Each structure stands twice: as C-alpha cells, then as structure tokens.
Image (cartoon, rainbow, N blue to C red; front, side, top):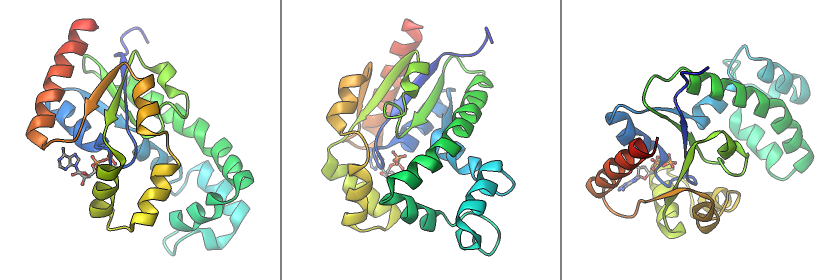
Length: 200
Ligand code: ADP
C-alpha cells in the first residue's frame, strides 16, 4: 500500500472535457482511471450487480445479448428516487472498490481519478488534490450535443443533475479552464502537471 501513487481527482460535468484532459495527462506519462468506465464494468455481464438488477426488473431490463439495457434502467430510476437509491446502494460499493483497486495499480508519479461526480459522491476525500474543469454551461451544452448527437433538453437534464460549475470550482484545489482550443488546453495541462509534481 505504501507505494500507491497519490490520487489527484479530476472533476467536471458531462462534456466539460474530462476525457480530453485525461488524455493530455496520459501523454505526460500520468495514468488515469475513469469512473464512468468502472461504472460500466460494474454492471457488465456476469457481475453480481447485473444479476440483482435482472432479478428486480425482469427480462425486459436485458438486451438480446444479455447485457444491460442502460437507457431503460436510466428511465426507470430517473423519476423514482426509491429505485435510484436501491440501484446506488447496489452499484456504488462495487464501483468504489474497483476504482480504488485500479488506482492502486498505477505506477506513475500520481494517478488521476476522472470522475463526473467526484464531490457529489464524497470521493474527493480519497484525493491528495482535486482539479475542477471550468466551462460555462452554454459551451458544455454545445459540446455534449455535438459529441452525443443529443437534444438540448437531454443535455440540460444531465447538466442539471450534477453540481454547478461554480460549486465545483469552489471545492477544488486547482481549476483548469477549458474554453480555448486544444493547444491552449495542452499548455495549461503542462503547467498544472509541473505544479503538482513540485507539490507532491
Ligand atoms: P467529458 O469526458 O467531460 O464528458 P469530453 O472530453 O468527451 O468531455 O469532451 C466533450 C466534447 O468536447 C468532446 O467531443 C471533445 O472532443 C470536445 N472538447 C473538449 N475540450 C475541447 C477543446 N478545448 N476544444 C474543442 N473541443 C473540445
């Protein structure tokens, strides 16, 4: 355990640029673990989470290949807080455990925990430092609509379910503004990387 690299949390709402920024850190030799990827693995075929979900909601919750019908599950829990609570109590422990296991396997000088709900889930407490991505909602909305080919209403629903940009910024140790182009962003990532290395 002593050799586990320090965890730096990278928080940002949907479409704020988490994956883009993680890739830039990866190019500097810093490993990252994405909480969204881990959350998907937690309900993959063969997991105890998927078995429990199947038992609760029946065959309709599975696609033909036996994998989870994620959009159906999303629609079930969206307006039903009891069902959402049940699902979170089932999946969150599995996600946390897997996330920590993967973070602890990293061998870089520090490791990024990339998390859309870093502060909302309290997982910032596992981080030595936290970074919040700063983007105005208008730009976030456009990037989500373009990337996911989705409507403004859908993009806004997800944005509204997460912490606001300002709340996230007020909780983080560092802020990365992602309103410029990729070259600009890359320069900011380089500077922040140097600063973090000096502080560790
Ligand atoms: P997240 O992982 O936070 O959901 P992404 O990294 O996928 O966000 O970014 C959302 C979309 O915006 C992607 O299509 C990405 O290519 C684009 N994007 C992110 N940052 C920039 C930037 N600085 N300039 C142009 N496009 C960007």
